[in-house]
Length: 389
Ligand SMILES: NC(=O)c1ccc[n+]([C@@H]2O[C@H](COP(=O)([O-])OP(=O)(O)OC[C@H]3O[C@@H](n4cnc5c(N)ncnc54)[C@H](O)[C@@H]3O)[C@@H](O)[C@H]2O)c1
Ligand SMILES: [Zn+2]
Image 1: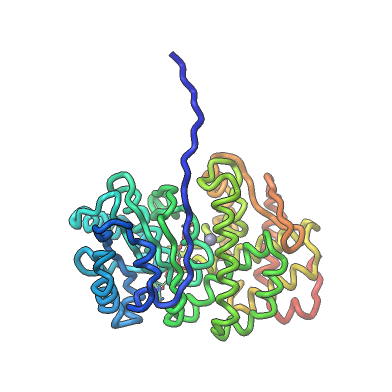
Image 2: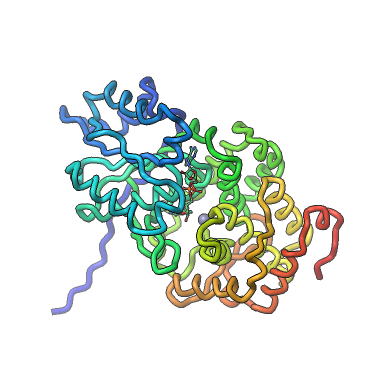
């Protein structure tokens, strides 16, 4: 017998933007989780340690919120604090701890794992939720600019392993994503800045108006003006949400990863730094390098290239790093990226802001030239119109 059948599974992707999701008078979460029956929904909560430390009353607020809404939702135990940042992904300790807690609290496939924090903890607990019982419902409450502008909207969950970033992981659609925009106030300046490189990335690929917005508001964003920054984060989130729901390849089964502009170098820099460079900071450098390559190839106009570098600089990103001196190791990022895709080299590039295309070959001599050029770059130098030809 030989049987072939094609079938599809329907998913719902949900995004809600709010402030203070655990405020007793914010009905969003209780409404979202209300099962419609008389049995309250069971929820186990994980909180990013960095967030918990920055907001000392946070855990008490979560407990009080669940107590106030106990006719619809039940907090199982108390909120569990787990390490935030790359520590959560560096080894299997945090993953194992999350799995242990999910098992001990008897979370079933109709209960919820709710994780509050930055992209790293969301990735790690997301993997735990996908593994437990082969998948329990996951709610990601994103509390960094990077997770809100990009990572929380994606369907990737994972941790680093065998010296490679995100090597162990699964594609899985969260039950819901919530942006808690009030939490952004306690980020460090570096973490506040970090998420805007993903917004620049998606603007360069898809949205010239968004890029203009970022360009004109870059100084205000750097000064932590939330009225300038949050609309940009939301627009970026919408692009990443649309990419998952409309692009036709949410689980990246094809050769291309069209949103991974600047990421071959970014992932390599993160690995080379022992994951001490923030993802967003590495993406800013990766974008700067790839747009410089595009300019040297004659695809991208000189003035557009300059606007992009100036905007990244104005947002607060440093486009220099001592690791850029390790040219050959960094170039290895091209092969790693190719291996990750499954053998086909497919690198996003741009001809103009909002005009993206894929290249399948990289001229490594020109890329090395782009690297040398970027290492010599200084914002004032570009402003003076120095020729790079
Ligand atoms: N899954 C995906 O599709 C995807 C996409 C892009 C990036 N990522 C991953 O996301 C991770 C980076 O995420 P990130 O930039 O959000 O950083 P992060 O998760 O490393 O968090 C940065 C720091 O901020 C702390 N923190 C979190 N929220 C806080 C708050 N509101 N106030 C104070 N401190 C807070 C954390 O404890 C941590 O120390 C990387 O591991 C990257 O690989 C995943
Ligand atoms: Zn990224």
